[in-house]
Length: 297
Image 1 (tube, rainbow, N blue to C red):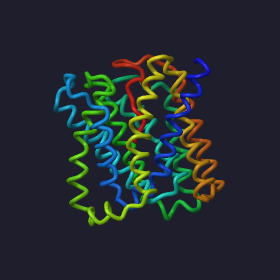
Image 2 (cartoon, one colour):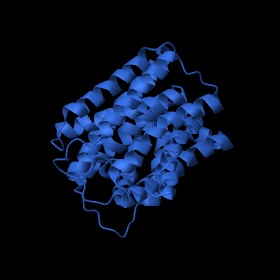
Image 3 (spheres, rainbow, N blue to C red):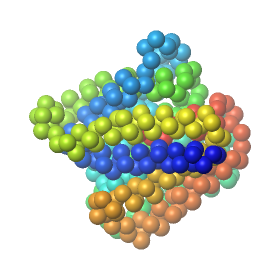
Image 4 (cartoon, rainbow, N blue to C red):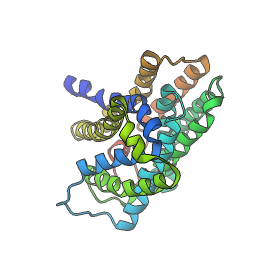
């Protein structure tokens, strides 16, 4: 990679970590589902190109928009609103083992013994974090995040098998489809939307903008710009910076404390992710992992 590309590659994980951290105020104030709907509305209207044809069959677009967008984000951000930012940035990395397992179940690639070890180590690390002191009060939030990453993994498998659109168009159209899904559920289970919109602080609106324009639109455009100019195995490891940057933000800006159990679990998760990123087998169907998968948002 060119030195300038290395510097640019730090931006997506930084934007993702910042979104999960500084966007938490928006998630708490505007409520998770409504905030997520606003985020997808921003992404959809920014990325979708109305003049370009949609090539993916609609039945698969609907399912992708539910599993890979609406449901996974509703679960993940509902969990993020309940846990420390450091925990959120780490546990969301469960997306990687779940995506690998889903790809194997869909016959997209073989699950090699080496990758199975990586998946097992990552899951063990998450189990250590869940069992560490201080995580009990946020267990429901962590379980929501884990369930959301599992939904994301299924959505990515569907994308790899059935998508016929380029990444920008696919994210744009599925984001627009996810927005009304989230709004319907939000108006059914959340309350006082107009009051919360009127009373949102500048910091909370900044959180919405950061999630929509920063963590979603800008981060993904940069990520795929890098993938077009560099090998997958050169770019993918930079995603591992997200939990590390999330820990730094949590400790520095939110006075969060990192317990020994959390640190041990974090090491195991990151070590497992490194193992899964080592190329061991060619995909059976579709493109390479990082070119076809979008980190969970």
